[in-house]
Length: 212
Image (cartoon, rainbow, N blue to C red; front, side):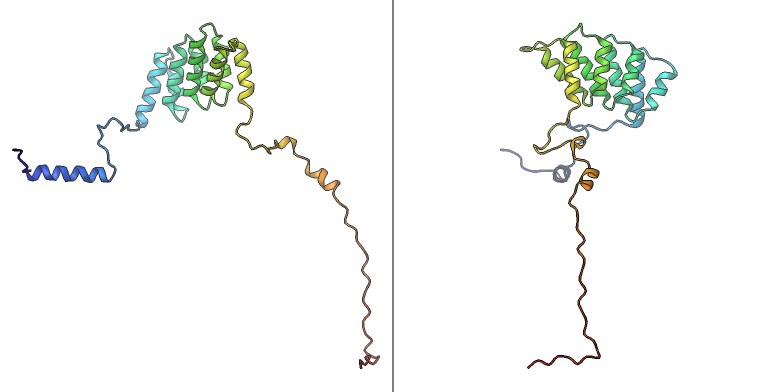
């Protein structure tokens, strides 16, 4: 027969655990809990990745200190240098893009699909794209069957498409195609000023007409 007795400490622990679950609290050791890195950890991560990529001295400190998310800069440089890119060229590209992590993903994806893809050209095209990860997917997708488009052609084709507006309504008209406001004012309808005939007023010296 099972012993259904519980000690006071066990009951207290059970009650506390139920309250934490009810409040939505999660233990720090839970697998879904991910703490944000501290500012010191972010700069340390950036410095470590840049040093590993072959960038030394004051260049590391200067580059990491000038960006908002230093850990993303380090990730970008690390990913691209792993493709045998020049560290100096890579660092410059990663500091001139709004999405440095996506830049690293773009270059890596294109090079994995085509090992002979021109590295510096790939870096520059990925950097110019507004959405580097999506742009890299465009190049890789066209390089596969059925198109099997050459990587250089894919780089040019996808960069042209990446600058176009998307998800627009059918009646959307670009601003450069709208009619000029000055033309509308000059060719608009002309308003005619018709003269107004004054209404005669009664002379106070004349007797008023009698109505019968």
